[in-house]
Image (cartoon, rainbow, N blue to C red; front, side, top):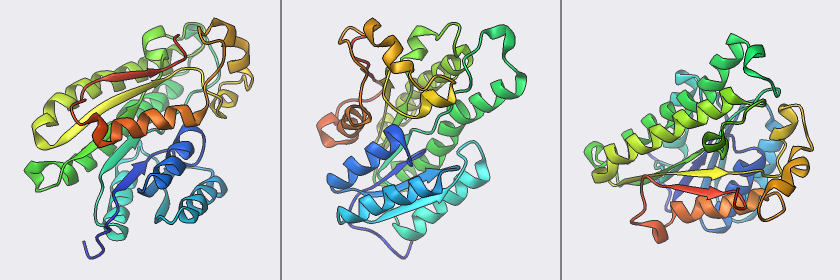
Length: 253
């Protein structure tokens, strides 16, 4: 690793838009160098990189499908070359598909949702642990998985497959946290609720947050920056004795 950066490095999967992009920008403002992965939206990824650099930090954007083990390995190899370290992994990449009842879910859809939302974070965490853990001569680190309130609520009539994939991610959080707790790695999970991001459009209802906001105790949807602040608190030394925990950012729902 010929190029070791002095600033801590945070990797955010799915970092070109929404919660991922907000986390990247806030991380840069807090002094992190930032790496993001994206799958399709290169202009959005470039815009995040530009904002990170404008904050005086180093940035890397790399096209990588987190459900593909070879692409994940390539992403981490690029981070090794560019930064020589990784301090925080945020498993943020996730997908939903069109709102649907169970009877109408296709098999390929189920496979893809689990591949991205459950297997992808496991693959990324595997690479991160190999670099972070004391047993691999690493310095320690933090893994933060981005789940969803749907893991608790189930998303009936909309996305039961998505909710189930996030439930798998939450169980993985619990298991990995216990596995690496003495290896210098903390593993936690964020559960966003209804947040104003472009993700709802891919579910077929761009205005979904406004439709459901009266069901939220606080009476409004959340902003991506509000989720980013929670992620970066868990990443920080302020959360030094926090592992295997779940932080709801849901406005009380």
